[in-house]
Amino acid sequence: MDSSSSAAQSAEFSSPMLAQALETGDPVAVALALRNDRVIVPMLSDGNEGDAQVRVFRRGDADKYMLLLFSSVDTYVAMLPEETDHQVVAYGADDLRGFLETNRGVLESVWFDVAGPHTMQASPDDILDALTLS
Image (spheres, rainbow, N blue to C red):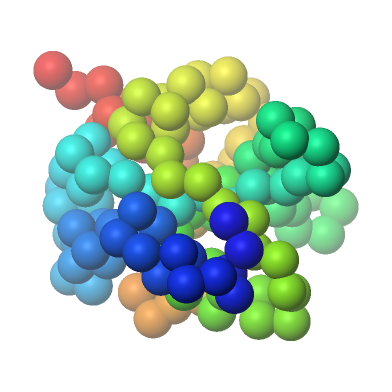
């Protein structure tokens, strides 16, 4: 999804439920948003259709990575305004759970809307716990 397209502003690529939960700073509300709505996940693509992968970030020469998740394309663009091609996908609870289960060993943290104004951080295990509550 290219951030310059009008579709980037569509409801498909935003989560008002997550944005509101982050604004209140309520971890329980964030967990409910992740379970019942969607989250915007940055992607990397090598240009070939179907070869996109989740974009993770690393602090300096840290051994592990950070997964940055967003309540909308706009909050992702705010983090990297100099980039021109903001590729994203909307993940539901099952997609996010699958990614975290597969990559938990290489992730040190999960950040939400890291450019603000309402940033929150959690461990991958905390997010998995929130997604698997019965």
